[in-house]
Amino acid sequence: MSKRLAKITLSSLLLILSLGLITSCSKNKASQEPLSKSEILMGTTVTVTLYDSNDSKILDKVFNKVKELESTLSINENGTLVDEINENAGIKPVKVDDDTYTLIEKGLEYSNLSNGLFDISVGPIVKLWSIGLPEARVPSLEEIQAKLPLVNYKDVELNDSDKTVYLKNKGMMLDLGGIAKGYTADVISSILTDEGVESAIINLGGNIFTHGKKVNGSDWKIGIQDPFSERGGIIGTLTTSNKSVVTSGIYERYIEEDGVRYHHILNPSTGYPYDNEIAGITIVSDKSIDGDALSTSVFAMGVEEGMKFVNSQSGIDAIFVTKDNKIYLTNEVKNIFELTNSDFTIAN
Image (tube, rainbow, N blue to C red):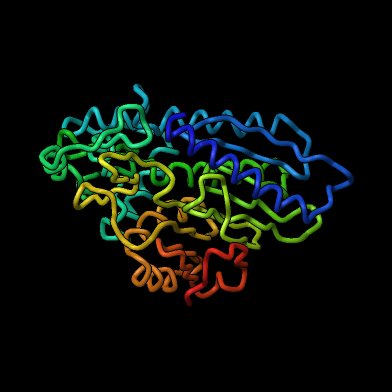
């Protein structure tokens, strides 16, 4: 089994475990069975489960939208809008649809907020490594150094009136993988709201969105992945509703060479994976796109600076899991997290 497929399977196992936690504590509305659908899209297993509706047309609408977004935003597929933007780097601006423009606009906001720790122009480096794809490899230092000058979010130009995107330098590439799943989860939640759904779980691999509350009016319990487990184990649970829970870490996608593991969270400044004490991080937020972008930038900051940053942000919380099995919790998340795994200790 490939590592990429193994990680999709692991995400599926975690989803099953999480949904077990969710459903074990609730009674079905009028004995109604949950309605669920899963497909492999956007490089992961996408699962949407409705707890207060049995209308399969809603799920069809949701998955049609996800497929539309995948065909627009991927850099690994030919003919997408993002592919067209990249092909025209240094040549001309490209007119895009509202979804693509909004996503790139938000990506630039987070690139600026993080001072480039998260950078949507990291595409040349991501493509070089291709972690999670069959062509994944460890590039040479010379190859990395040749691509680094092409990474600079400040060289991405947006024209709001024309809805165009322009990459100033030939060879530049956008990579929206760091926020595309979060944006998609938010879009799904919006569709469910429009369709009158008030109780649902949206899962895109490491992105879980608790849409509303359980049918009995109580909060959901979401399992937080153990970054060292190969079998979908968890470190504890979060009790929450109407929140995005995004988990990322060094266990998700990686390649190994000469006994060294290289994970997928790449430093735009060096071209190599970030190397610090963090094994996994979970961001709790109102919007999943926020959690997606911040999971990368806060991971890059490390525990001490990451804790300070998250505690300074309104409506954002985080759980840090370090390589020595310690857990660090930001201020508000302490009230909703329960440790269930005795292999870990809460350090603050």
